[in-house]
Amino acid sequence: MKKQQALPKVLAGTLILSLAGLITKILSAVYRVPFQNLVGDVGFYTYQQVYPFYGLEVTLALSGLPVFISRLVAEQDDLDQQRAVARRCWWLLLAFGLGIALLLFGGAPWIARGMGDRHLASVIRGLAPAFLLMPWLAVGRGFAQGQLKMEPTAYSQVGEQIVRVTMIITVAVLAVQKHWSVYRTGMLAMASAPVAALVALLILLPTWQQIWRPESVPLDGQKRLRWSVLARRIVREGLLLCWLSSIMVVLQLVDSFTVKRGLLAAGMPAALANVQKGIFDRGQPLVQLGLVVATSFSATLLPALAEHWRQGDMKGFATTYRVLVHAALVLASFATAGLVFLMPQINELLFVSRRGSGALAVMMLSIPLVTIIALDCSALQSSNRFRAMLLALTAGLVVKAVINYPLVAQIGITGASLGTVSSLLVTAVLIHFSLPGKLRHWNCHHFSGRLLGLALLMGFVVNVLARFLESWLGRRREMMIVVLAIAIPVGALVAVIGLVKLQILVSAEWEVIPGGHWLIRKIKKRG
Image 1: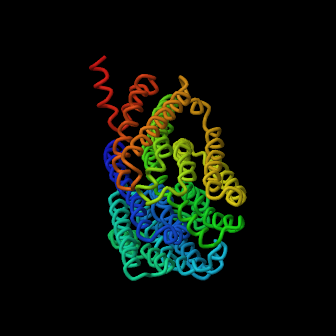
Image 2: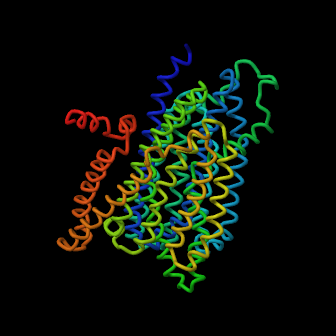
Image 3: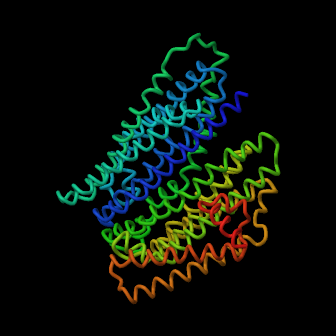
């Protein structure tokens, strides 16, 4: 009875958290366009070189550790034990966060030299204080989620991002007006992270008042989770969840240490290498927007699969997995095809020039690969197969670290894009073959072949249409709005007609896609 009463609360909380996550991801991707337009490619390079460290802090404070801590809290028998385990997590994470903050602040000159630009030290130091606030945010959010209260996490997440984005854009505007150096601009933009984290902590204060409230009855040693056990679980489970949540950020961190150095090794002047790295970094917000699909579907998939697993319903487990995988891959594939074949126009509209369009187009191939990884990892998490995920993620990271530098030295920033795609491909293959047997065979009725063919057809149509419109309207930046406003709906129409004619999706899969239910009803009426 208690579980039945809690279910609506869980579903409502999950919806709130998913909506907050969607808003945050869109904000995180969109603000980089005006920021790049204001500070230019070199200013964008300065910011993006250090951004992966911020991305890791966000993962620790928002997605990875809070999910793990919420599980720990939910495992406890009563409120007093929940408070006790939350406080112990806080002490352990405080030591961890302090260590990272000291490493970034004190080691900033060495890290900057490793990135090939000693002037980045001040930018790195601007971010360091955010890690001191990470334990407060991670534990506060995790404690609330463990009690099925998703609102504190959602409100703090959105509030933090709004404050941070506002500060970054303000810094960019002031930098243009006052002619600040790109490194001062980058340092002040990174300093928005600890300020925004402090705002999030203020939103979480009521939760922390609950955590620090004394136990009604002092707990004996047997009821407390031992420090050693807790520390091992944080390292084994918590950090793995963080790595999974930040897979693209970790690969970006490899780029920060290899792309510029690879360009310099190829004989490129330092100033031009900075510009090229800034151009390469234009791909990150585009990939991030594409990955909204993957993260949204994986968030939907995990609780549904976990419930089937607990009930021993393997048929329902496999059916749910296949439906959501097919729906997510359809959306990810068409998004990728559109971005690849319209990249010159998108690049010019958003970032003023078409430079690097080939490298950015290759980077877009990350979207379906990360979609597969996210969905397959949801299946592995629900069945508690953590070791397979760890091995696959490690293998992908090793591939990226080994091949990235030589590829960049040989073929420039396109090599970095190929390094990322190759890394994700290795990870996706290894994770997929770690799945239970029934889940490996979702490619029924030649699903992948038909979908790939249709995506390429759609891409070809929009590419030809965009070229025709450009020859008629011209290639000025403002005209790209008209070109894309026509090409994108035409591409969507081709995709929908093709999906229906080729019968790529069944009714249950259409129901999962936004607008699919309405479309299926229309088709049935006409049929």
